[in-house]
Length: 195
Image (cartoon, rainbow, N blue to C red; front, side, top):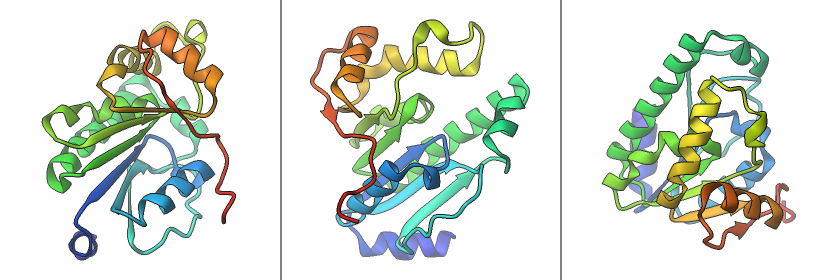
């Protein structure tokens, strides 16, 4: 993989790192975004290894799947220690890739990926925080990794250079929670209408 990554990087002058703590094969808006980004950047995607891998990603996109294989239900049933260990490993890999690839753009999806990418202040990359959905904070479990990460993301939202939401009401709700009233980009949760 390293040799393939080096040959692809050499063809492009700029790298976009896409970070997602889910399987991008299951998110048509993410597939669309990667296809748009690859017209301008070398795209390297970091994600978790779960669910079936069935999207035929273009050869010039590097997909780096981390962790142990398993379904979403399997991952949800794991112990807190295993979840924390897998997340910290994911975060370490994201930090390493930011340092190694020196991306000009780090495009993160959802709180887990955003928080994992917060090392970015040591780089000049533009940090994009894209939310497909927004949690109802009062309905999160009191003591969970997800709750901790969601709250850390809320407190750190202002570190993102660009915020993206699927519609204006979710953007307004999140702005209230995060106390960040910057205008957000609205990108609907749809696959490409041009495909």
